[in-house]
Image (cartoon, rainbow, N blue to C red; front, side):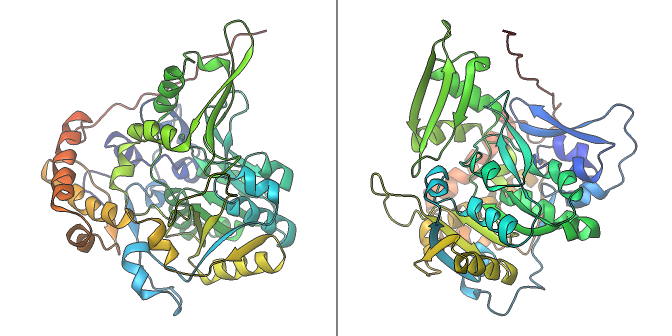
Length: 427
């Protein structure tokens, strides 16, 4: 990793933190996760915190990521490896439960696969992210133990989340659990379980969902404000996607007179606004599709979606364990698999190879101007800079990075400040 990254404080102050929360799990007496309004979830030092042991930094996906490919099975698809990581099989599919299929962002695959683990594999639960009850525009980590608890939390959450700070819940269970998270969250779990054999025994299967980056809480609040809801304490519920494919952004709130109202907008419009508030680390991430997971799920964007069409998921088996799990879930009637075709993967995410190439150039610009960079081993990026970006895109990648270095102070240490949501009025 960068010589300037010696501890977790360096990771956060040099803007390499992903907000996953693994540091708070690995060294709970030193770190606790909190909110930073413009950045996302961040680790903060506890009062009278002991010295850092190094376990948190060794588990941090923000500082470094390594693909060694030593344990990849022979069936891994070599032609997809450089651009997409380990891939064994790809299907288009959906939950056999119509309610889960509708409630999920794209077919309900992650939810249904987690339920299969609990109901048929003897897993204790599934660690995932859901909306906070008191502050529904924020997220919290939860270990769900039943179908009902999981179905109540369907739908993507385009807001800061730290599912790894809930790994202590997994450790308290007798049986293993499912872990569901962003690609960086799953990468953190895989790094942590190598250091902690006890954690390794408690992870039954890892499921990652495709991710284009995490918008900050400020992004959510600005969107609410734009839609005429300046007071977030009035928000009663907020869905970013789901209840249709790709689903609507929908907020339910009380107006000043106490009457319940709601506002909706398309997923495309809401994400078009929120993506401008993504944390910096997401701009230099080479893994948007869960390359370290057993199973990865996302949207099959390889074709236009018909209006009213029921949701479908792109389901990627990345390990043999993941592939067998998917096939067992299908055989048990939990998930419907169709369109078994590995070409669906690159066809569904046509821009990601260019994004991978852009990361290569951004890292070079960051080093040139004295900014901190993660250490990546085993990721092919340079070839996609040359093959998948136009001359104009190459120029924009370079100039855009230089502008961000100075606008975001990427070559300086920043002071990460905690933020507390405004309290609701007592009634």
